[in-house]
Length: 254
Length: 314
Image 1 (tube, each protein chain N blue to C red):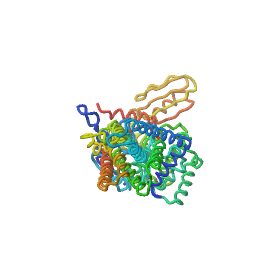
Image 2: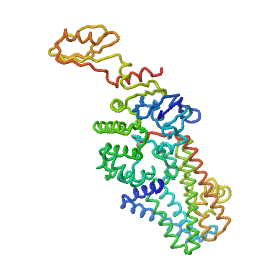
Image 3: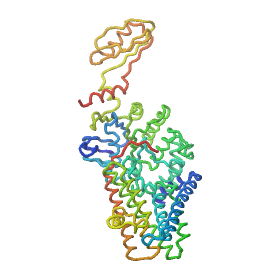
Image 4: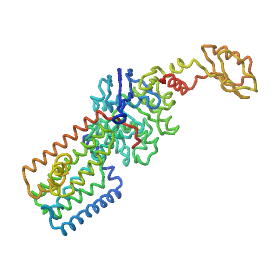
């Protein structure tokens, strides 16, 4: 067992230490996600279709978004916290260990609440996704791409805190990508749509992987994989550059 | 030398746009530390202590200067260095809050590449050395601060580091906890020849643990000598405390001032450059009803306060 595996085991044990709280948080998140499903079902029941999107497509989008997002925010919970950790100078303990800092931080904390998203997403796919071997493979691959893009993006915007010294920007970025990612991509047009494929890559954390499950397109799949590689690389580079500007701090934490 | 620091500087940029300014947290400091030394690195708040220790451990990148710790450049070879040093920051934890120390040690053992057998043996050894084996199976969240600090010390000692960097390690501990902790550090140094590099605001930490003191203020080293030499060279002053059998007038001597005078007690402050201690003691014995007499150095606290204030920039 190497250091990162051991750290991940520690994070699992820490999350599991309070089992009642663990299951309570997961249940709460599943109920929260269920409300969204009810909302979209009622919405499309009333309006029929919106630019080619219907109930099935939006539910597939929700399945991918909650599965991928749940992996990032639940299993790599600190992906969302990098901006705060950098701005508040809370990386000292990680930097004092002989481990790759970013990887260590990502596996150091598990958020039970968001594991509920992943469970919900998988169950939703099984319920509405007509799972077949090829569709399951595409669902898993799409969720992995969504998780990678989201992790890379969160690390990238979180790392901006190293340079500006504040965390508000990364929080705004997080809310923007999750919000835009949860809507049918085709309701956006022009520059706004282009932005969702580039600056705030919301398209790649739900709509694009969902389309790949429903109708596989090798070009689109290659584009999504490339986006995952690009954002993962940008995140790693920005974090490592930012570490050089890390100023530490005196926040009292355990 | 175990640690060699040459012309080390660190500047932070603070404020925004028009009000942006550069603050020199550390300015051109140089010193070296030999293997097995116990060094206190002290200074007032904002002097640059923590910034320096974080550069020595590779956490911060310096703005200028060079550092060699165990022959390694900390910010370039951070992971290699971390395998050979232990760091304990009083305000940071390496332990998982919800887990027992033994569980945390298992994770840290894997991080430091210790085999299972080696880890078990090491945890038992540290339990004995730190008198803390009974704490290994109590979740950290249920431990007192003093108990937790002992577990933290064990965590940073698991891989048998050659140097221990301790940044305010006794902060928040009660008097007994502090004394126990200081004894542990000295024992580790004596039994394993572990180099100790300590920052603290607590003078007792310095007196109990350190053999040598480096004082830093406004980012510059302003004093570097042994604890004893610090007392002697900087204060040519002695306290003569006299217990009186009955009330009496104090003798008048050149270079002697009366700091305290009650019917039963007299404290004389002697400037030993103006008056010898022998003359003062003879005068006291011949002119006063002495019930008790003692000669003491001034408390280290006042020596350090004096160094800080004399070095304060205008």
